Image (cartoon, rainbow, N blue to C red; front, side, top):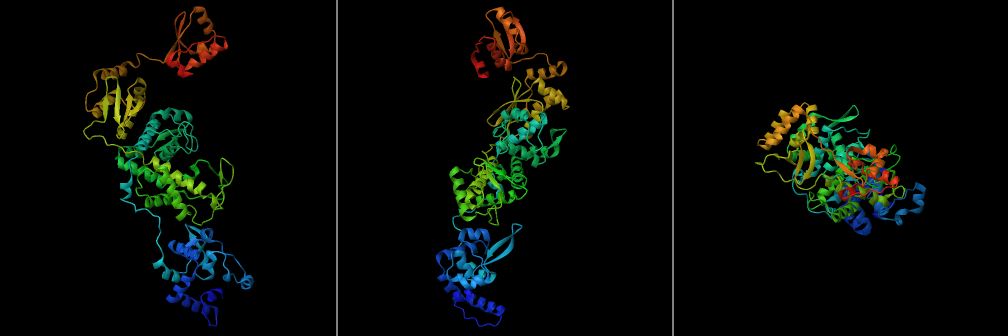
Length: 535
């Protein structure tokens, strides 16, 4: 009745089915349709255009959030109030004009109530529907061409593989490395975010998760062990392939929940709800690649914020296709408040977008790796036993780490040193000194310095013949003072050797213990020069 009145249709059919068919034919007549569309308020036309741009269907919650709620009435109330005469919002204008209807449909695999334009009507309206505005130029190049190099992340993954191979890493049930292992590997990393404190939202947790996700590690007798075949295949592949493997591992990983790693948010009642990390990540990356002029360029803060505003305006329901913002139970850590309702979109969806773009995507698209000249050998071995290896030679560096100790990282080179400890570790892995020498000379494309070769062979036959220990010299003005100090348990435990009645060598790491113990007995000890840093 209301629709017919608004369309000025005189329907004389006998049955409801005949009336519906006659009214539909009247509405689809081109001149009638143009006249009614032209008479709609601007807000209602905008709502219809948005629905058409979305393919003619939109979750009810999303549609009503944007264009107003459609009142639900029984037949008697409907006849009594005649709401089509005074619709309260654009959504009701369209509903009472018969331009939109409600039904249940499947969205992203779940049943949800939707608002839709009937197919025969949609076919008449689509050609004139406006396209989506506010979109940047299309994505340039293929996905592989967009991948900027990720040398630091690849280098740090290699460093972690080296450490698992050569040290004892004892992970917890959730895969978190033990504190001692994190401290040991921390100085070797190019970006140690999250390594020291074990922050689950940091880069270190992301890297160790990748090791598990890629199937490169397993736990044997509570110790992390490498799975040789996939590790070797990855290390021996080209940098381009290495990058693609790592990037795809994240893109296709349903077990890494990006939203759960957003700082300041905490999931509650997870037995009652769940989000879809894979769908969310794909939506963000897809929108970013279509929106950004150069998707491969690391996004600035201003560009990220502009993108967040774009998604909020044009694709706000990328994470919740049903348009419902009252089903997730997420608490803000700082205030303890639950973030329920669309008004918290920026704190949840906006924060998720910022996380994806400024953390995983940035980690996976870090600065460009400069290829090593083809004629330059992987190694440079010095007379002091230092071995310099190019960062991009990841398989070679992994092999070197089995027989040498990391010293420092210099630009695009890692520096290792040959030591009795590293040679003993190599021997435990059944790597003979003769193989070490052959390996070094092959990759240096030159014979080893004479002294280095002789030292390696001498160690093989005689083992350790001399030791250097970090220590501090403790001097007293009188022998009686030194005797008094030696009566203190903390001092006795720190002693390496007594050189004279007034001189001791103490362990470097015990300087503060010795100073504190002496002070407790009423004696001030002056700590000179660089030793002050120990305090």
